[in-house]
Image (cartoon, rainbow, N blue to C red):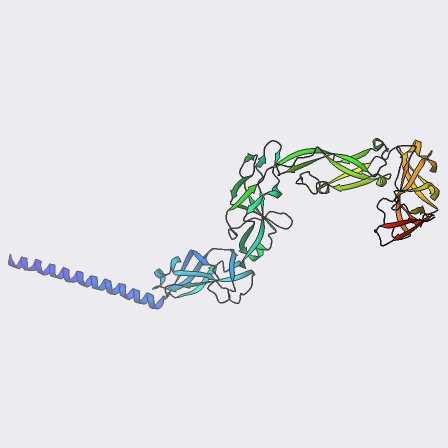
Length: 449
């Protein structure tokens, strides 16, 4: 029995010894394999995707105030070789991909190389980057001050009320726009815009935080996140105007008192205008007068008149679709005739001095008459009244020019379109001596026996 027990104990000790030897042999084999692998196979290939691409230029020596406006990629992929010891240390968060800005000093668009480096000291080789280059737009950030205008497309006035966008004021009246210089150069106009919908009868103030940018040709400029505005919010004061549609009517000036203006027919385009005022005390007229001098109304007469000139000196604004009104004489049925008038038929009136006689030196004058074709041919010089109205004339010289007025005393629908000037001679009246000081001064008259 003792012998059997001893044999069993010996077998257990032997088995344990053999197991220990087997474990040591296994560890040695693994260590040998690792040593052989590290010495014979030193490099391992690795591919890493989605590495953030650093595009910031501010840390480079060639920045010159430049900033990255746009880059064609924001992440890259890398294939590389590394040692087996560094294999696990190389990850997307231990690699830094960046743009090489070497020798870049001015704003432009460039095709630049991408570089990759480790951030933990691990060594890499045979680096292949995708994409290997990127397109980068560089520019300087600047600030542009521009006058601020307003747009309120959904705000309207009540009955007989209107909003004139040109009268809307912004506070502040100027906005500072910051962004890339190339983008700022395209901006010609800036509007504060409100999309609020309302109907107003009195001056109203609203705030706006939306801007509209336009180029020189009026094209809207798409706003990028690189553009900022100061202030971000604008207050707009919107005045309301009272409006009215009025007719254009003709007013003939320079016509004889007995001239029949109803013989004149005109075509007026447009026939009406829309006018408005923001002054509550200003009364809007029912008509706008188109003043026409009779002597200008020749056959084929047509004239454009600025509506703004008709409203000059008032608090009234033209809100029509046009800035001018055209007035044309309807010449159908009219004819013209040239007539010669001798100086014996030209009279002077309203003499500046009773001590002088005023006579016309011109032997005759030629005048052009306009009137109905069935009447004009019957006109003779005897039917005409030609006179020189010397009221207010400067007669400091013995001879001076002055205009002649011609009218028809027989027909009330005949008029002259000739602007004629004659020479007037001043001579002392018989039996009177005169002493005249200077032009425009008093004249002393002494009667002689």
